[in-house]
Image (cartoon, rainbow, N blue to C red; front, top):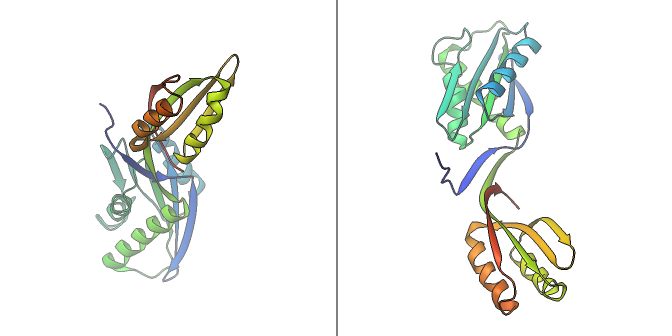
Length: 210
């Protein structure tokens, strides 16, 4: 299935954050993941690392929201895993797994208190992992003479192009990426500036950011 999204929101890196609520310690762990195998390994890792904890609750969303799961891990149904998953959904994040570890402090929080605590554990973990929104970029290449290459450089800079590779031989070949909305105007400008001597070639798309 083709991915038609214009933007893609996820987290940049693995992170951890914690807080205390009525003597219970809550530790939120978040990690970017792409597959169910990565999810399973991350959950297994946290359960092994915090084997002495009272609960290791998790929630995750991958594959553009198609696959979403959660576990209460012994907490009353609907008070732990679902709030974690709901927090991920509300953040707009995909391809992320959150595990919230709880060390019980001896004071019952009640259903409402648990929902708030696990929601907060997921929230601070996602924030620590840095939520980021990528945009769809067009990947392109252009082959130009050395004199035309000098003319292209300011055009690429103005378009905020990401330069992936530059090859110097008898001519100069530049592989770059720009926001999809800027691809056609830039291609036309390059053609105009070089009087039709160069032509951009489309190499596909990807998600990127500047």
